[in-house]
Amino acid sequence: MRAALASTLVLALLAPAAAQGKTKTPAVPFGVQVVEVCERFTSGDERALDDAGESGWDAEGQESDTPFVEVFAGSRTLQGFGIGQLFAFVETYPNTLLGYCRVEVPTPTGDGAQQIAAIEGLDRYTGTSQTTGEGIFASLASSESSAETMLLTHWTDESFVVQMTTITPQPVAAN
Image (cartoon, rainbow, N blue to C red; front, side):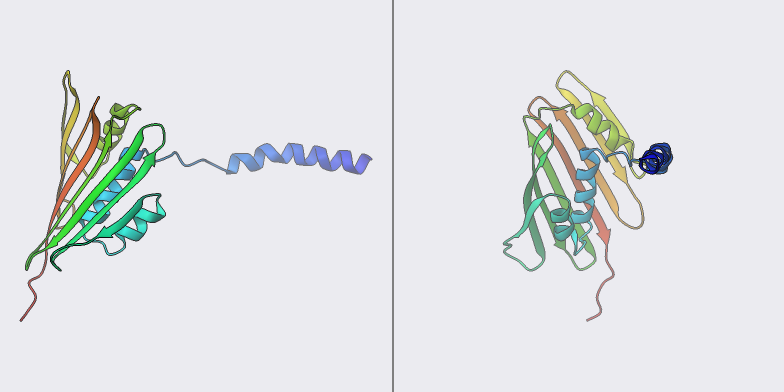
């Protein structure tokens, strides 16, 4: 009995010390997650569709009428906010890759101001935002590496939107 009591006491004393070694990683706001998914699609990343699926998106490739355009669509429930509807495409030109991604949440039920603030807080983007009687609107851009990315986001009573366009110069293939 004493041995059982002693080992219970030792475990009770060690538990707080073990718990201190564990730190929780703060959750990434879903607005930032949406930006990251769009970055993958607009960059032409071959794993974008698989990575979207692994992060909870029900996404798939769509039929295109040309081999120079890849089209994607999908959706995901954004907890406490609504259903995000994704549409993306990548166009390949001789010296440029053009990527576009739009995620819209019709009639959002959560606080979009927090999501826009989190997106604006990303170091890789600069720009401005405006608050009007209609909602909050942000226009941001990034020129990391050789690609140029333009990002619009807004939150109104009618929708929450993240819209991204990326232009990436490509080497011209020799004939």
